[in-house]
Image (cartoon, rainbow, N blue to C red; front, top):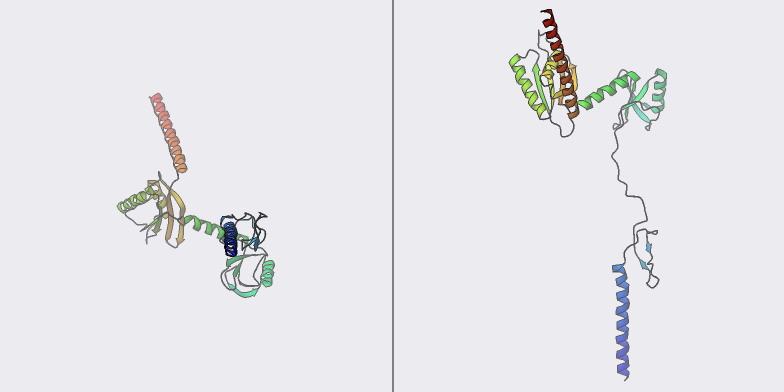
Length: 273
């Protein structure tokens, strides 16, 4: 009888142990984490019948994870009096190096000569600044804008042609046909013309002649300019749909005007007869 009672007690204890273990581990497996947790170390189970479960959770934060944005390149221009560097390498208005100096000295020079400080190269040690007039800054900004405009955009192919101003008529026609083919494919075309010796050809007029042959599709991306002595260049591009429509409208109006003028001349000649 005693043995039977002991066996029954052991079976009951085993069932209770299994039930409590299932309840405990089932809580860990099935419980969904809360959306907002105010403690980074302790998470309390809301059901009072269940024991507290300790675990590590992420700290509460309603903001999205911040992504480090790439540093934007500052626009070329006067920095005013806000200079974050203590020691600067300063270049004069004429482009001569004035050496390294404290920013207070650089600001003193700026005030004495009525100039502006412009950051030229930030990645050097110490950073390089230049004293410039407002006119110099404006001219440099125009140069940089023109250079940026002339540089091909990602995915755009730029072709190049170079020839002398004394080029023969047949060769020029061949070059022009090649330009037209590239323009048709919406490539940018850089044309460089070298002034030939003993040649009086106006290279700007020659550029306009080339554009005239492809005027139905092309326009200047970068207008003709002298890059160095005896060498001029321009860049042609395909016109946009809006530009094409405007060009076709203009040509239509021009042809209509020419036609009306021709009719009036014909009527006038008939009256005189």
